[in-house]
Image (tube, rainbow, N blue to C red; front, side):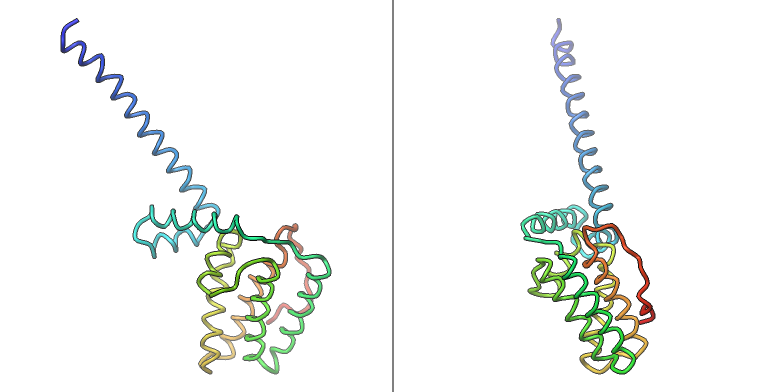
Length: 193
């Protein structure tokens, strides 16, 4: 066998191995990306847009998953769920006469529900990161409601914006309250606010 044939006999298998390794890495990366996109939904796109790179955004989302696994999350008992549902109904009913106060109460109630479920409530941005792992589909509602709530504190929110905030808080509230259970869509007669 000549030197050229020996070199070809070494390089061709090596090239095949490198190509297969590259394809394997590409498939793993693609599978991970698809899993993150499905799990985080719109939050995946938000992380990519606000991050330095797609890879960095995916690392951040994976870090969120890791932190989330370390949280001591719990489901609420039926009695706790009923108590929260009744408190939400009271808050929503007060909206007609006291919209600004009702939005403040809704924000407090959502934060309390997160705490009772085991989510840390150390700051809004961390709340978003922690909630994004299981509640990514309702997270934008929470962001919007929180923005209105901040404007409400400064007396800058209109009644219509406050009404919208209540609806958005309700979306996350229902998601947190119903987590781990089959969806239960029963009208309480108070769906207007």
